[in-house]
Image 1 (tube, rainbow, N blue to C red):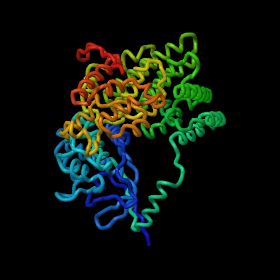
Image 2 (image 1 turned 90 degrees about the horizontal axis):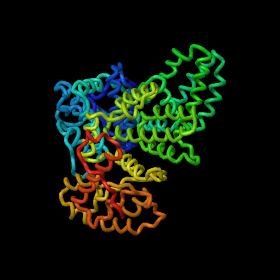
Image 3 (image 1 turned 90 degrees about the vertical axis):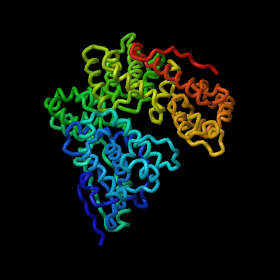
Image 4 (image 1 turned 45 degrees about the vertical axis):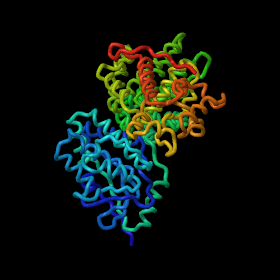
Amino acid sequence: MSVVYAETLNTESLWQGVRARPADVQRDFQWEDDQTGQLLADLHRAADEGADAYFLGSIIASRRHHTLSIYDGLQRLTALTILMAVLRDQPRTEEALAERLNACIRDGESDFRLFVPNAAPALDMEVQPKGEAVKVRKRHLQQACAKQVRFAASLYRKRLKKLTTEEINALGDFMLRKVVLIVIEVTDVDLARQIFVTTNTRGLGLSEADIFKGQLVELAAPHGLDTQVLTLWRKLSVHDSRLTEFLRAVDFLERGRAITDGGLLYLADSLRAGPGRERDSLSDWIALLEHRFRAWHLLLHGLNTPGSESLDAALVRLHLLRWPEWHPLALEIMTRFRDNRARGRQTQTAGRLRRLATRCMGLHLADFEPHERAKIFRNALGELRSGRDPMESSLRLKPSQLARLHANLHGEQADRAQNLTLLRWLEAELAGDGAIDHLQKTSVEHILPRNPDADSDWLRDFPDETERQAACHALGNLCLLPHSFNEARLGNQDYVQKRQAIQRAIPEDGLGHFHLIYSAFSQPEWTPEAITERTDWLRRLIVEKLDLEAKDMPDQESPSLPMA
């Protein structure tokens, strides 16, 4: 008879006396920067707030002797192992804590506790051995899974550098003692597979928006307002795909707390303590929710009316950013815009949103953590409500923050998501108030490719692998192109072939909308010197477009845009 055991364990207990490897139904490690970064952000926030525990979900496994075959949970366990390794190898981590972390990574002096075959070149050699996780690697990796491991380690190294010694040690201890998982052990392999399939493919989970709806209806019913809530919800549900984002922005406007998974569930508690006590107050709040939702609709889709081009273009710029902390401030601005559409209000709002997009890009390039951005936007919202201009105070980078931005611009540009956002924004700035909708269907082209073909000229022109990888990830080696054109016409070809493809492009290819292509493909050859020159030019252009304080940045000439 098949038996299922379930046990709640913290990270330190989980790895005592066991090893783990993927079951045959498991996919490789595939988490991107968003997921790996969110894990660290959530753990750091929980540790910083002094949470009693952080639940990381359940793991489904079958056991053979001391080895667990993981049917569900491999992504989390792999990311957690990478983070523990980077924390262990931090010079500022206390020795006793480093040893505890190492005991969760390595079984004595022999085998590693987690073995993921396709990740082995990076996980087994670059991450899990003691002292290796903080080293920067340049050698090429073939396996996509191993590359994801390397990207995760690089992201964690970068993020942890910004923490204090106290924060690093508090985070490490929190991970071991207070990060908990439910481990579901199944004695029968077939049953384990069936549980995996059922867990991942059956049922319809409740979203945070669904849960909040139930809480709000319950709160409204004693006042006879439940029908008003249900009527409103039918309107809101038309845009269900972004409804949780909207409600999280409302929650920030109400409570000022960081935007995180699960945070919305506490909004009803604040309503019970405030508007929910009196019928009229709750009715007014529900009406305000509908008013805010109409403003949110404008925030997502723009006005799209004659004369609204500047405002619509500013909104598109904001939506290039993939993090949500700007949503509440922008929602407040658009709510005020709907309150008063007096003459000239549209131009004023467009200018304010345009400056907000510029300030947000500065924060993006300074690489703030979510909780840091939340603090900045909490202050900005307070300034806006008191009649001050947050674009010139809270949202303008301070000298220490400018130093972070400057260091990031002069570092290796290996963060793929950040590169895409940066280049889309820069193209939008160069387009002015022109159409920029085409930027959503673009990808970053590495002119010197990340994986040159074995018989290509690239290996001859850039023979040293370390120097080639550094040149590949330099800012000057990047440009933005339509995704379809990039995939079908460029690929890993030599520079001559890429340049010819650009020159032979027809109007239907859509290259005429892009401004940065010609600063790359107008060169007769693509050399290290050309990459360095274009990198310097792009840095100056970015600083100019960010409207930064000149006195706080290195002296530099105003750049001119190379023409075709």
